[in-house]
Image (tube, rainbow over the protein chains, first blue to last red):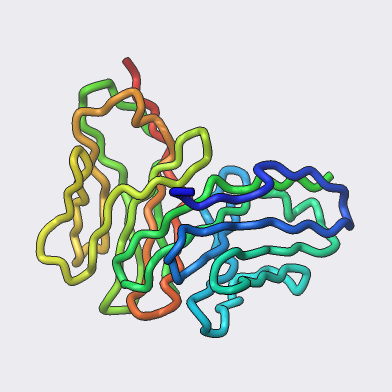
Amino acid sequence: GAGVSQSPSNKVTEKGKDVELRCDPISGHTALYWYRQSLGQGLEFLIYFQGNSAPDKSGLPSDRFSAERTGGSVSTLTIQRTQQEDSAVYLCAGGGRGDNNEQFFGPGTRLTVL
Amino acid sequence: AQKITQTQPGMFVQEKEAVTLDCTYDTSDPSYGLFWYKQPSSGEMIFLIYQGSYDQQNATEGRYSLNFQKARKSANLVISASQLGDSAMYFCAMRRRGATNKLIFGTGTLLAVQP
């Protein structure tokens, strides 16, 4: 596809369950980011992948959160033992390595933890 | 620590008029980039405009311009000739050059364009 895709678009889960969110970036984009947007808030950085370098995990809020990027393309964000405060929109973005390269965002996954 | 501040939670503007959305930032880095994104009700984040800290001229992209005042650490977005389709959330963001390139976002301004 032409843009960043994310799946599912919506996910409702019960507290304590694990969830996986998927991001498929634009082909050729070496950088991939995950952000979280809570209701009425700005975006909060979670994790960054750049090529084969070790990811920057400094934004992950707890060890229940993890992410991987296979083959430098598709990325999966996993949240284990979900809590109600995990409810948010999870946005994926991709881009080039240049300093002024814009980040292209996907449509997001709206996660609701009951 | 880096921080972006958007002090206007909401703004109204009449169609065809210009509007300025405020953004101030705090950083000790000499090199950084500033971005504005638009988020309509559909939820997608749409890139609008970029300003580098060493750019001599204010950035412009069509009806969008960035009023960059480095000494005041402000990067206000000016939208000229507002259209109904401009109604959305607008986020200012900052990125350090050469680092992770993660974006630090402000809390956003909700713009409503009235006919």
